Length: 124
Image (cartoon, rainbow, N blue to C red; front, side, top):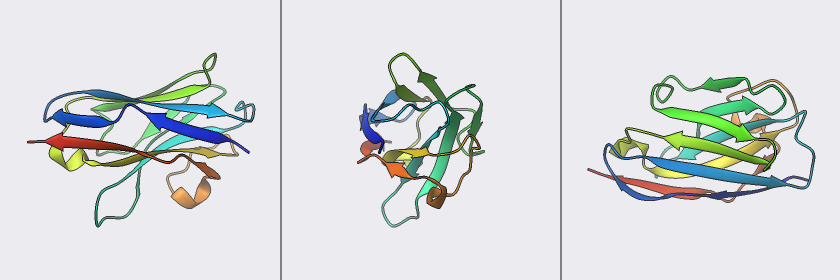
């Protein structure tokens, strides 16, 4: 079992920044991929970014890759998502997820563990 706890969400004005954190516990993550997803009201959950825990390879959705950056701190067992140049359409609940594989995938069904989510609200 892997437990994931997100933090760092909040209310921010358009153009602002936030850094989300996801603290993982319960398992060694060396053969895991960590991902960030988001779900806006009335919309389907969508992939935002993923990172291979062991070598730090990343992949981000086209819609955010110029503004959002995923990273990890292996010593702290924590994954981060830096959100810059935020837009009102980035408003969503952001979820951290863990996948028992070294291959990054964008489908949520490919992830085995999920956090409870953290709300990000961007005002115009």
